Structure formats: structure tokens, C-alpha cells
Length: 466
Image (cartoon, rainbow, N blue to C red; front, top):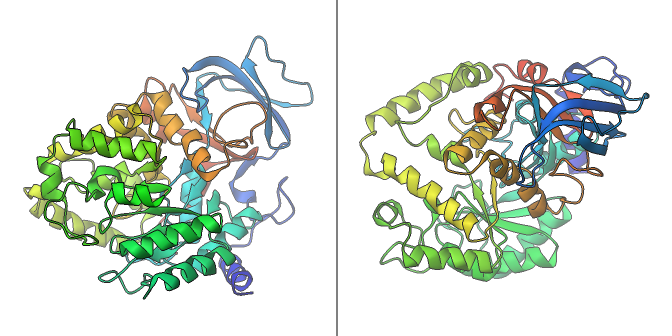
């Protein structure tokens, strides 16, 4: 009843809209280009999400929300009944699947209006929220999106953060092992799909939460500090967030369960050392996924890209002011040893070595500062390529790898016949120009074509407000 009530509140906040082929008085109408049940995209280059090479001059036929045919344009028939679209000069990739895609930002509890619109505009057709600041409302938002009442990606909602002493008061801090299990049970019964452990969680509570989540068919991820990556892997954690920047495994003189800064240990770490290799082998052997968050990590480094006019246009005036205040602090601390330029190369090298060893890498933005929904997913793509992954590898990391983690790889995550038509149409040759990811013409969600420009315009100035 609570969730249904929250969904009604969410919908009441949205503007009334006209009708479209998607349904009379559909809230999606202002953002859709077309909703034909049967169409063909002709002459596109395809990066299919498998990690394989680019396929040039392809035709993709979609019917009733699914890909029914895919192949070379001169060999693949587009039926007379299909709407035909000549799209030479475009690249088609699977819809992005964001794996650290919050519906909140620091200091902003919930953004049910701007976040889903900007994610979808950025090419994200599915997302996992990885920690919620307003879990009941987020679960309601996921249902509203699924019902076509709100434009946005398919949402895998997460429970509130599970942490421990020293954490923010808005995070859950169980008093004992049974309370940690009860926390999991409560959110399993109320619609959460994942549990997120946060930096101060006590090891015995983390182990109990992981065990109980698996009993309830939920998965567990963590932004760790009180736990080493290796310890969490042996407990059975499914995924770990942020990569090497959050690893406590190399901190000397650290008490078990203690959360202390790891910056000095990482600065001294040799990335090809036996200790790093051992950790990577443990993660791979235990089947742990790593979630790269390069956009938010980059924002810590004063010498790196720090936003542009498109991000500022989406922010509320108050949020822009907060951004400028933060940038002054960042510039003043630019010589700090915590975020020297050489650290970024280590973070990226760790992820490359993990993938080379057989590990599964996914990605998400972790919103904050100028790192905004959708825009930062696109920035992640560019940064993965800069980090040393090929364009097809970067697409695979952000699509089919993520689909595997969410257990939906039989229906989405690749451009293949039989899959849902969750697709992103990019203007230009993405394989030779990764920055083309910013030039998205249309985003298809289960065959419905959305206009990113309209979605972005509807959210102009709204990040930080709603």
C-alpha cells in the first residue's frame, strides 16, 4: 500500500501530456519519435555487445519490441509492412545498462523527475541503482517506469545502504547479526532486488547479510572499506564497487573491520606486484564482478575534465553554485597527495588486469558534482576506451556484461535476433571516434524510439530540484 501510494505521488508530480501511438494520454508521448511496432534500420554499423568486431552496413528488423532479423543490408530483407529508415553513417549499439546509477545525489535525497529522463537520454535503457537514499520511493519509481507512466530506463532498485558505526544517520546500522538478516528480509519482501554494503559495515553483519540475501534470491554489492575485497569475495559478495580506489587490502597495520584511508598504500602499490595478482586471482576465482565508476573517480583529479555547459544546463542554479564552490576547494587542494595524476593510471591498470585475468567488469557513474545521470554514463564509455579497452570491449562492459550480472542476458544486452530492441543509435562512427557517444540520435527501449533532445530539455535546470 505504501509503495502504491508513493507511485501515485510520483505520477501526480509529472506534467499532463497528450496522446501517441504508445497509448492515449501517454506520459511518454512528448518524448517518443515513433512507436511503430514494425520497422527496419538499414545501413547501420553494428557493435553488438559481444566484444566482437564492428559489422558494417547492417539491417536490423524490429517487430513488437524485439529484434527479428539482423544481417548485411544486401542479404537481410526488410518486409514491405515495416517502416524503413535509411541510417547510413550511424552506429547501433545495445542499450546501455548502468550498474551504479543512483536516483539521488549527495545532499539530494531523490530525483524521480530528472534522473530517469537524463539516464534514458544518455542511452541507458536498464539500470541498477546500487544503494538508495529513498528506497520505498525508488521502488515505486521502478514500477511507474515499468507501467509506462514515467519515461526512464528499466530500474533494478536497491535497498537502503547497510553500514555500521561511523556511517551517515540515514543509513541502516544493524545492532546484531539477526538485525542484519531482518533488514534483508524486509527489503526482499518490499521489492528491492539488491543489497548494498557500505564502508563501515561490520564483517559479521556483512557475512550475515550476504548469506540471507542469497537465501532470498537477492544479490549483494559493496562500497567497501571495513572489509577487504578478498574478505568480501570469500564471504560470497556478488559485486564490488569503484575498483582499486576503495580497496583496503593493501593497508598496513589495519585492524579487522576498521575503515581507514587507503590512499597512501595505493600510492606506494606496484600494480604488477604479487599482492595485486593474488587479489585479482581471488576475485576471479570467487566470481566477483567489479563495477568501474571512472566518471566520478575522474572528478577527484583537478587536472582532469570537470564538466561542461551541457551538465550545467541540467543543474538547478543552487546546484551550479555548489559546483563552483566545490571546484574552488578542488583547485586549492590540487597538490594534495591523495589524488595525484599517476594514481588514475593505477586505477585503470587494475581494471585492465582484472579483465585480462578473466574477471567481469561493468560500469556506472555514481552521480555527484558535475557527474550527472546519463551524461556520466557517456563519459564512462569514453574513459573506458582511454583506459585501454577497445570500443567493442567498452560496449560489452556497459551492456552484455551488465545484463549477465542482472540475470537478463537472455533478453537484452546484445544486438541479436530474439533480443529486446533496447538499442542506441549514434550519429557517426563510434568505433573510430568514442566521443560520438555524445551524439545519440535515438534511444530505443523495447522498440519504442525516444528523442534524447526532448528528454534533456524536459529536465533542463531540474537536477537538484526534483
